[in-house]
Length: 403
Image (tube, rainbow, N blue to C red):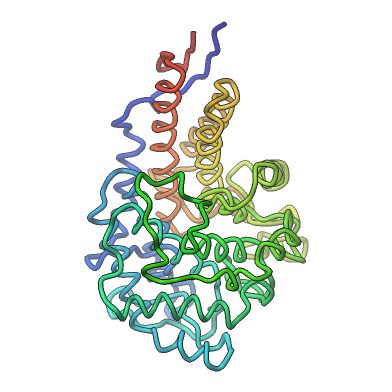
């Protein structure tokens, strides 16, 4: 039996797509290792400014370096995140003592002075703290020297204590999209992933060659989980009370892999069936951000290329996780390929914008984490193809022809 999937040049390890997209991403990198979100200086009054640091954006933007094996710049980016968090460590301590969300880390920082920007913002974003815990543990388990001082160790302890004091699993936050406050499954899942990484219960052990007991660095008690799993299961498959689904829930599949197989399929089905559009993926039904008609918001939402890249990554991961079944894994790769080729159509002068409105891209381009996810999607496609070739001892031609 012959199965044909037209993968075009995606099988080239030196793919021009990877090179070009990575160059756009690197144009946003600053000498201190951070990535500005996009090179848009905004308006004279300071509104709409994107040429600044978001903690979340930096952590996701530098992921591309890891997938390409560029660990030195990746670690420099991560050291910057640690520097920023250490700079405002006192705010986390204060928030814990006051049991308040008024003193938590800001979302945005000046790219050179690292000073906080704007008080008028939804700063209580638990996913940032969850992601920080998750990736810190992940890097340590991969053998990288992330925690270098006692103060940094205390920072991690205080972040965990803040989450416990704030009751992360039952109290609202502003989430990835900085809207709310509301209880978000994506935020609960991010924190759950971060704590699970440090709790060392075996959930993530299959990912690592050597076992590293993180509890010897910063112990995490099972009391920190409390009702976390129950809270997540009650929220899912919804993102929140107000949102049936949101493409940010793809994070529960990648990078966190914190939901079971059935829920992964449900999330994928919800996103593909309800949110995918011609120019990208809408964040959720009725999204007002850059909506072309706020008087009739449903059907006029902004469309994000980032969501297409995220879907490609998730399809690659699903192909890898199901690689024992050749036909099933190839079906996921076929869907990944479709989304990766779709990204070509969404480029504007070789760049990916934040979003499209009425068929036109906005000024936030190139968008850092969109290019990072594009690179990751392409590279993980190649990685998964190679994994399947070796596992099943089959030859895969440039057309993905399997005999």
